[in-house]
Length: 154
Image (cartoon, rainbow, N blue to C red):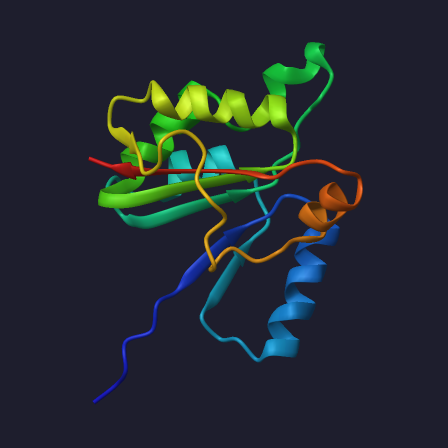
């Protein structure tokens, strides 16, 4: 009897990020990953059916730290609503960032999505399953904090 394997899909728009991911997949001899180099909004909107995802991870998205560029941030209400519609009931939405102001925006935006509920009282502790990324290590080295937000689909 075949063993069920969870397939994880990774969206990465940045070419060097795809290359680094491919290198790690080969080094670890992983076979349950699918990579898509494309805009996440388009993939979620056009390629994923509603209630099809067990979970979504958005780790260290570009913070667009200049105020005039904040509108380019990935975690905004329209995209959160779209992602929430793709989560199965009980599915999770996990974001992490090393930019405090963006962390507060993430918490605020996810908190107002009516189909999601915060799994913590504010920010969540870093789960064991979340890998330490080069961005997180860089943030720690620079003295930044790291904030996780984890919400569940009602």
